[in-house]
Image (cartoon, rainbow, N blue to C red):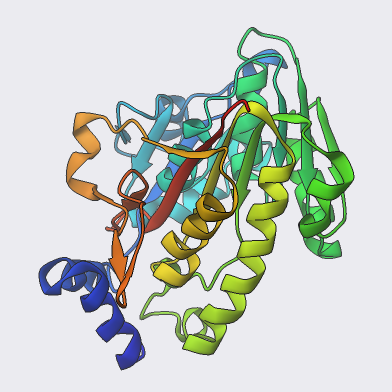
Length: 321
């Protein structure tokens, strides 16, 4: 059973009505989102989701959002058949949660940019960044992927190579030291910080939430603060950083962003564009928690449902001095 003190915190964060909606999503069967990997077109092996569904004699997939072209959803019962299809195993079609795809696209990577993904494994967002760098049909710019944990590092590298990523450099190291090492180098930085994974709790998988405690949240918060400082230090003046987590905890979200904004005068929190078909599933960032105020109204919280994961996003620009 999901911890009572966790559900009580959700009510504090969202209010009773939305908290009830969030908790209900933790028992719903999860649909699957499929993204058509643009890099497959470059290597000449592209398969569409429509072709995949036809091949498997499944009902047609439906588009996820106008903000996510090439992303389609299919019902939970089709998951096993789809995951066994060669279009998925060969990387032409990539299963990715829409929240993750939305966060990566919010970074607005352009061909020729130098991009850092500071906590990259397993690589779904990294693949989206690589595709944006190749939007003109050829690999351009540079993508630096950092992952400290050895098994995850090699999984990341294999995943990217399978999906046709050509312009990535891989670094097995602790992201907290990267900013000092490289200085203000990158046009774009993505930090999907390691977190307590609260939005991935599901009643059918007790292992997804038995690790949770307020102590765990605080431990994550300390590491996230150091990682965000490192990410910001690696960002060029005029560059953009997206910080995100799959946690609901303000200690891992608004509190971390507010700490950076207070520390760095050049840091400015920017709005994230939200299309009309996503309006009902997002909320603004919190401006207050436990008697502390935050200037985080332009941050974004994605509410979970039977497809989307809960997600926090903050888009930060480093202004020129």
